Length: 211
Ligand SMILES: [Zn+2]
Image (cartoon, rainbow, N blue to C red):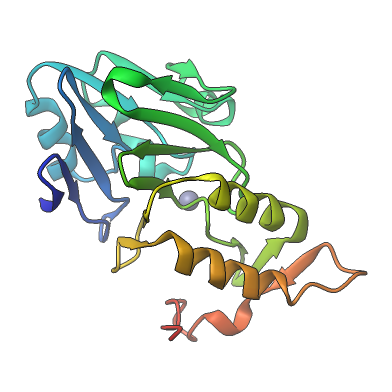
């Protein structure tokens, strides 16, 4: 378990088993959990928490949600797309604010997957995979319109940090991510609905370190 602040912790993502980062936020009244992963460690950690448990799932990809049928919780928040896979949970259609808890749940425009949710707590926005490109058989692209909407979304946030699932640098600067995504957006061509980001990836599929 890694610590970000006094009340934010996470289990880092793993590749074997393929499992997303799992975030734990301790508020005054409850624990908020962002994504549940697939690992036994994450499952046990979630089940051992005492008190009220609220779970938010970032999107429907299995590495983020598979444990949902093996953990207990009080409240679950999902997008309509994710509910097709979980068959349970409250669907988040527009921004939900839990003022006493400093928690907000919002829908994020995303090239990566339909129905992505983001959780904001204090100075941190937990993004899941929503800021990533779409990958189809080794072909990496952003949708131009969705990328623009995603940049606007990131600019509308007030927090200093974004947390990106699977990235070895889980906590990143929101401003820097916006800069990077603006530089990708600059590559758009009037006649093409997508932007290729093939050159961001090494031959083994890992993301190149961009200085
Ligand atoms: Zn994903």
